[in-house]
Image (cartoon, rainbow, N blue to C red):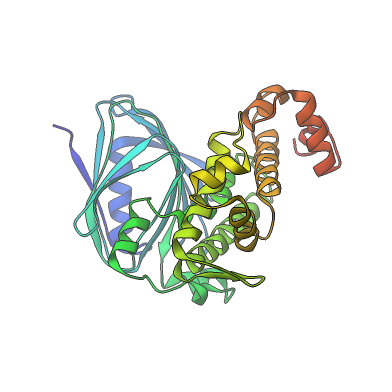
Length: 337
């Protein structure tokens, strides 16, 4: 039988610190990295990979997971209503079973937001399945202190239980705008004087995206005389992910409109009202931002990066990147090495 490890307590309390310390000691050996980061390397009998924890202000932490557990892994938890956690899964799957929310899977490209109520349950990982994710943890009450008055009060009320459940189990389209900044955090591996400043800036960007995403889901979107119903907002928020998943053979506007049960005109006007730009420009920007992160933080070849972000050839990618950034991919990488 797979043992169940236990976590409990509000972030920053003695109970929480002791629970996490015992958990990491049971599954990993610790390697302090400096600049506020501690790396936990899984013991061979437990699995392969690392859990990296970076301490921030006001009791907040960034936790990066790159793990594959031998024989699977189960982790029980009991958190108070002040527990805040925003987690983005890049790859793999984590099974969630929670007393109030029920069962669900946090899988690749999905985001989970903890509810503002006490939670207790178990998360489970499959045998040998690689799980890559990044989470921001802290307390709901600490958000105001962390942001220094920059807008924590702008986060909307939790909403009905089915909405809270969908967000917690990674099913809410309103959370998808958060994925971009969190993915940048996961990819960032540089050790430099500006490291913490960069990570903090991406957390603020993620919280801004969270505020906008939840706010858009709470009420119809009105822009330039256009009113969008809640189901239309949900459909439009799926468009960026549809484009990303099919970036090697992009769907046409007509394809996207059919998938969204909208006319092409409604799709294009609604998308611009929601995102402030066209469908094509939004996707182009996402692809080039992803490429810039890969150039800065990996040793992938330009050709591999071009393919990863959906360009048919390195030449086409180089031309698009140079027009957007004013420099070639190679020079961009050298300037950040």
